[in-house]
Image (tube, rainbow, N blue to C red; front, side, top):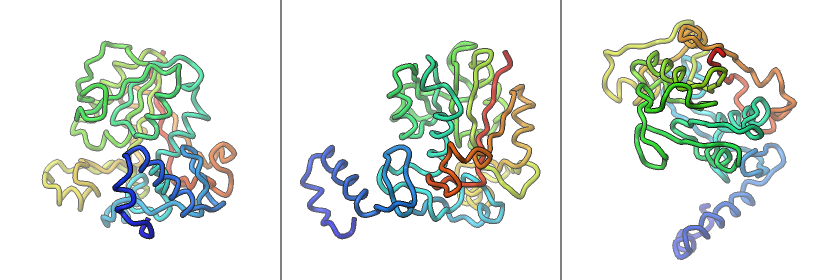
Length: 267
């Protein structure tokens, strides 16, 4: 937006400014190569996004690190959010069957589409109370057993010292047969999850784990950790079903290395 004076937008009401910015971005980035499934914008490329820390590149951490073609210039949805939305739309019945859903640390674009679904009894929660419905610690969920049909909790578990306790709380509050999507950044080079709780500074964690609040880098054994908590685990690779996820040309610019971890509580 460098060609439009800031003062022009500053004089407009907030809602008008947002719509004008969006309209300008649609035109400025217009193209036919990619499409955002949230705002339906057609763009020639998405924008770069992600953290630059060397460990994320060295360990090939999917879901973290810098990506050249990740951020929608119109609605700001990133690649992993686009994958999650497409998975929900194509691989679950959440948009057609009454569902009581707990959404932890909600992604704004995902939250918007879920709240818009009239069949979803939606509850958003986070440790910090801003912009959510309920303040909640995922290691001490304040809801009774078997409360939710589904839980979405993405890029949270790596920040939790006792992720096993968080797994147990998710299991406890899911109804029998209920499901959860539990995405985390995962290394494609490590066999075992890397943790070092002696690293306590933000700078140290950035160097070791790629983010100031991360406490570990998950690895190939993430599925084993979920199964050890009692979940039935399905690991979905969207490239095995490209017809519903943007086709061979990767219309939605998804990360070809990213899988979806969907778990179920045994019935």
